[in-house]
Image (cartoon, rainbow, N blue to C red):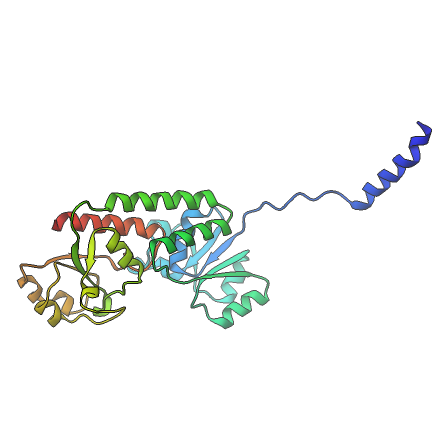
Length: 270
């Protein structure tokens, strides 16, 4: 026993020098979102208390892809460095158009910044959902949202022939074939009026062209004078339906509502 004492003393001294063991930091990061599309996704995948603020765009019921009741749960910012610092987040999520000076200022102050562009397909949107859910430490919530998206698309998938549709967006333009809304139209049983006529992203669709060469279905998502012209009522071979502009640009949970609306419209014209 006496011979063991020196070794025991050395061992205890070594342990004392190391200090107490630190528990790993398992706290989920807090987030400020400056991007209306990521606002909607983060509202679904972040745990209560994680999402400190969303962009001020999501507070506008006419523009937001979020439902007003969902947006009302969160504070909003105008995206200034001062506002973000006051919230003291661990992570800032922004669009790819974030001002470089703002990004540099945030990073100089030690904040992590993640930026996202617009998803061009459902697959790209689902990848963003997974990445954002991973960033906030809730991958299971991301997978649950993706399952809901896939279920909505499966329910909206038609069994019969496609309907030719022209989506008349604000400003009188049409979407390009590499946009998310075009992917949704294809998945829910519509063929592209614009593609068949060689039209590209943001090409202008005039009232005169609609009258002279009407699609089977005109989805009206704007409020310009031409898009409400009485002559559109005189085209019996063309069906017309309103499509909410809030369903055009964002992915994530917005896909679910867009798929449901497109399926509803298709049932009414079939």
